[in-house]
Amino acid sequence: MSAEQVVNDFIAAVGRKDQDAAMALVAEDCYYDNVPIGDMRGHEKMLEFLGPMFRSKGPVEFEVLRQACTGNVVMNERIDRFEMKGKALALPVTGVWEVDDGKITFWRDYFDNGMFMKALKGE
Image (tube, rainbow, N blue to C red):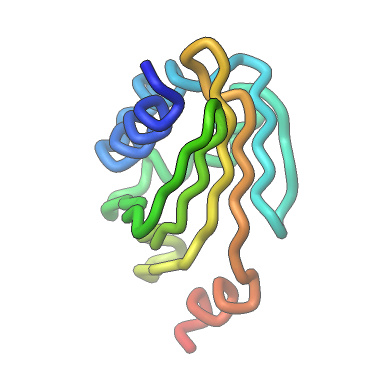
């Protein structure tokens, strides 16, 4: 499976809230950096952070607007839609992914935390 297909399948699994299918595409020691919130390594830490999204009542969607792939590196520009604290959010995100041996080994997302905080406040 290509790096791009692994990332696309991960995004689709997140959209279905299929935590097991999503995490099956992630290396046990994956490095995940959610800039500007912080970084973490491994399934357990990722699930602590992402778990509420998988368990939320509202929909989760990573709408990919643009995507490029070179070798094992995938970059995408997305709109991430999800609910948090009872508010529907739509957040522009840029993601950088590395895939090795069919598993995501590196994932870094960049977004504007100020925009995120305003959206949480309903501004």
